[in-house]
Image (cartoon, rainbow, N blue to C red; front, side, top):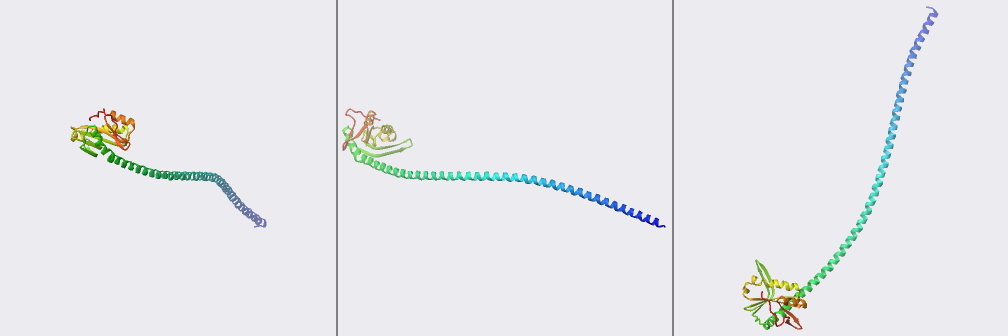
Length: 259
């Protein structure tokens, strides 16, 4: 082999190596380019994620703003509620004072009721004394003056039967006559009407007097003139106070009604 032939072979070998190196370099460049493309894709994906994250942060910020507004509104409502509770507490205090005042008035009223009850009790006692000490003895005298002889004077007669009941303050009785007397502290027209109804029941509820003449009378510590006139018109004897003693308001020509 000549020198030129050897040089030629070396040159071919170098060219071959250079070709191989070039191919390897091209491959590496291609690989690098692929990596750059992949990196660029990753950067683009990262940028997209950053944009998405930024959007989420913006959305989160809006949500925080909404939550902040909600808390502000809730705080305002709590303040309004607290104000209402304070107002309600003041109203309860007013109601409490009203109840205390009402209770005080009830206590005063209760004392007044007790005083009235005591007065009524004293009045009842006075009425009882009036019947016992004035009307009862006067009845004997007054009805004897009218020709009605008195054999019995019964006080506080009470009758209870299946078909009714009856209460009579004084019952003046002889063999033929029965006089039922109603006594009041202050006689009224209603009292007279009640006694008229009472008289209509005597023969039915007190049958032992069914053959007697049933007469009626009213007596009062106070008897207004129109009430006395009404009672007389209805056929009742009217016993009135005349100074220190009792008299009949009826005239001598009076004709009593027989029940």
